[in-house]
Image 1 (cartoon, one colour):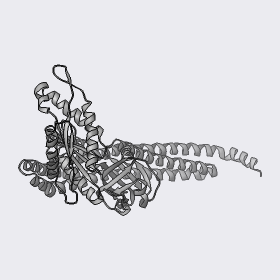
Image 2: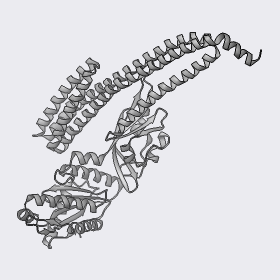
Image 3: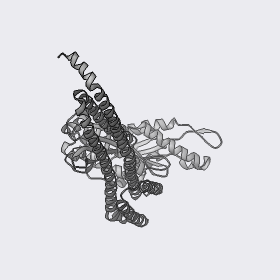
Image 4: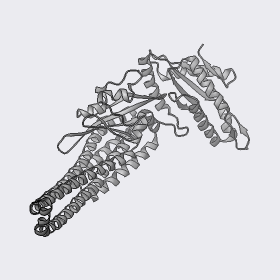
Length: 505
């Protein structure tokens, strides 16, 4: 019997049964697709909201910690307002989690730990007024351990929601299995044709599940694009998988296929203050591949003509079975952290405490690298007369614009700070006396070009006097001693008529 005859026989005898079976299979199949999609979407949306709430809660906790640490470092009262805002955000996220009926025990733990953290922080703030050292000690002994414990509980909240998502997905898979059994019985009636249809249907269902998983991953990555921290991800095989916009900006490039042992070379990561590539085994993201949580602050990224110092934290991400899924690194520009935590409110420059910290770091780096380090002290000429004649508002404008002119005239690697009053201080890495004189002379030319308008609508200009010295990095010269030497030269510049820079003979 030929194929055509067989087809005719199947059409006469089996076609009605095939049609019935196909209709039944179609109904079951459509029901299965709808069930899988609804279950997956329900799990995705409901649990994604709770996971985002847990992540937002963790981010708010870190914001609060950063504000608290910044206050203990700088004593800036504005940071206490930021801490208060972050605490309010924590309560908002907790409200979202409570409304979604997450694990009540973990939420109770969060409330308890938050109360302990608030108490420890309040004690540190109260103590800061009399002793910054005692305040730091309270932070290290009481606040920091509680905060780490609190962060872990919040991570467990996120893990609980991920587990709930997995359970929902398992229920969808169970529904799929039940439907498949029924579908298999019907397919036995229609033979090869239904088998092919079932195969195609199974493939479509798998693609649907894969698509949902891919969409979930993309949704997570879209969220990470808005995080003001560099996020870099390796897959379980150690291959670069994802980098958000902030990471690409800090690293100078996006995803480059490479092995973990070549990451430092590919992204030009060096030990701070040296030309040595950062050892791969010490990179936090490589250590995360081994299951470790770690951090470092002695790594620099070199790209173009810029050196970017980073603070990096690495951690592994595992599935419900404990298998490694990703190694994730979060990093921030150390300079940006310092600018936000320790800046002068009027000029936006590093304040005295921040500048002292930067000075100590640069002095150590310069000593290790065997390079010179210059410091200059700048004082605006006749600034009291500006305030007396035109008022303090105009005086403030003079300070702000002069500070901006100095920053614009100097290199990106140079640091300008406000030492006090109308005195500004400049740190010049890799610079000797003559180099410092040339840099400050160039800045003075730019400041002379500035035009200001006084209360009488008459325009005027300003100048500055400065003294510059090379720091004795080998002897770990204290900043007060270096500034004192620069101040003596500044006094000479004033005595010689102002509007000039003096360096050591």
